[in-house]
Amino acid sequence: MRPFLYLMIITAFCACAKEKVTTPTLEVMTAGTTFKAGDTVAFAFQGNPDNITFYSGEPGRQYEYRHRTTADNDLQIDFSTLVQFGKIYPNLQLMVSNDFTGIVDMEHVKAATWKDLSAKAVFSNGQDNTPSGVISLKEFADSSRHPLVYIAFRYTDTNKPEGQNRWVVRTFNANSVSADKVATPLATMATAGWKAVDFRNPAFGWTITSAQLLMPNGKNTDDNEDWVISKGFDPTAVKPDQGVALKNISTTLQVYKYVFTRPGTYRVVFEASAVRYNGEKRIARALTLTITP
Image 1 (spheres, one colour):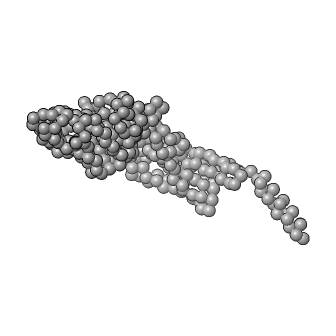
Image 2: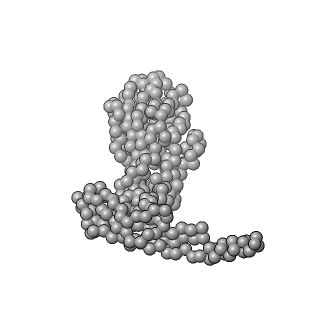
Image 3: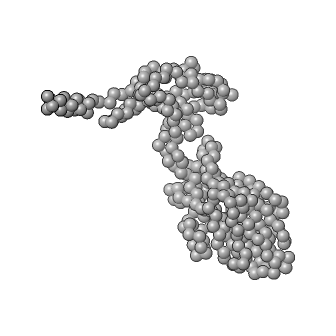
């Protein structure tokens, strides 16, 4: 009996191995194609596929971007500053580089190409927490040519009778901003990875904490130059858009209800799939909905 039992098991296994994965079936219907923001949209299903995944078409939930890992995003920064003591003048600069190696020493900082973007920012003239405004660094955000963008503050001052200035960078934010204006945080003051480089007068240099960047003031002291440089940012790197899993093989689903909160035109996609050990089949059903105010 035992050889016969083995033969039955082998035969059954071979039969299963030859079984093809069938294409799932799914049809999706709604009461219309235009709804108001805040309305509940009911999606009725015909068919019972193993799995259904829902892509609403909203930012971060778009079916066509489910495999996307890069996007033509903008890098936007903002910060706030305070300057005190001595004769106040614009001696703090905002510098940006695409070809800096990330090695923070004088030699590598000098070897890099830095662009002075100070004119794009508002700096303190004595008022605390002066907002810089939002500064677009889109011209530097090109991962095909330059994968990382480095941001620096360059402080310079001379031996003035009235003393040198004290600068404080109070806040800092860096965001990756998509074409549809969705902002993804990249760093704050505490997470920007600041490192300091002294060019002149080592007695005075940047103090870096999680709360601020501080350049102390001096009097009757030598000319000074100091840089503080962030880690590299790649605003074009994005996470693939994600769908919402609505059902699996152990559940059934006849209707799914969803609320769109913002007006717009959305390409809604339901992906149905059958996934087995020997393969998988997928189909997508798309609807275009208009959401009015």
